Amino acid sequence: MAEKDVLGRSGEQLAARFLEAGGYRIVERNWRGTRGELDIVAEHDGTTVFVEVKTRSGLRFGHPFEAITPRKLRALRRLAAEWCSASERPRAHIRLDVIGVIGGLDGPTRIEHLRGVG
Image (tube, rainbow, N blue to C red; front, side, top):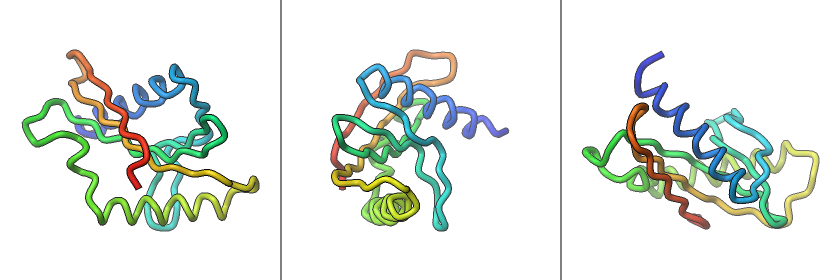
């Protein structure tokens, strides 16, 4: 597995733990739809939350949130709708969030949570 893939998986694991510590219940991880993947699907206070995780070892190539373009948001909305259609439970309240993980595999890590991006 390439180092960037290892870094990405590590970031997703840190994000899941961060969410659980904040009272979120992880419903799915790495759910594959017909047009892509949802990193994390969670529930929090009656809301289904679709979480995109972006991990960077540092800020040399920009902040992780900068990777969330309008095109990426449209893709996340489509995937969230697909997940809701495939789910057997009704979803009254949904939200798209992004978690940015900054830090290397061996170094300090900073986690930032942006709620309601789309």
